[in-house]
Length: 425
Image 1: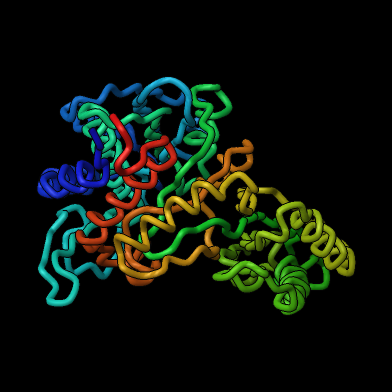
Image 2: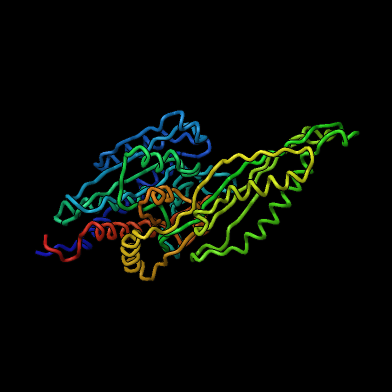
């Protein structure tokens, strides 16, 4: 007797679209803005929805001291484990439920989960986090449910699926995926992280945030020579940084989708009053690292440059404090089975070749890779963050991409867990 697992998965998911859409809408309607990072309520709602689907959920509240150190107010990590027979790999599927605040300029309620029909793309849902990445709560949950259904009907799957739903991607992932792995709460063989439907992401940039404090000495503006102007010194340091940025542009990445390293000064403040020589200026910079810089000491390079520039200004002292370090994601050798399974299934479902590329962002996927776990990103969404308006007003998701991405993930997982169309059951 043959067992057609693709027919079972496709049939199950086709009948679940309304329920999957309603699940996603419920997640969008519960705010989980980070900052301020008070995400426990969203985790409770997600847990309740998952349990209504018959899934056993393990909730792991992060200790308050760690939450506060991450700049948040509350966070609870959710893990669902589905075992499908002895042997075989364990595959973790990670999506984050925290989102950036909605900001201004929305035409749709950012927590309304409103669905509108588009004449080209079909139904589109609007809301903060609908694409980044509450959508993949729904993608991964229904992929797991489809495998559960196929296994119940006789598919000879071997291995396990774990859903990792975490809440601190916007602040670096240290108390989400990194914490789950450090605590030994999960030891997967592969990891799939939230992504978009029209490309498989195998690499991404890293990011370093530094806070630079330039100290001088205040004085009355009528006698500026009696002080040491921190703002004048800061402009000298900034000039050195901008000159360095031009040199960074000569470093090129060989990863498709990623071009060069970057450097941006995004915040600056200082001074006492208009008639006082500024005694202190503080600024923050963002240094983007390409995958080839995974082992490069970007922080040491910047510190040396800043200190050398400050030393050219008598009376000035400077301090550099690391705010964030997210290392680049580079493809691990063991990621090929995951990539090939996703690429083959995505090409069949979408009727086009799906590229393997890098993105100039940083994500939680790096935490799995840094633990030696082969990791790529794939999930529900259009070809680019810009199309989805992620981190922008009117963030949206084409629901047909959700449904198709769920099929891709479910079928690719079935391949990795050893199921083959037409196998004897």
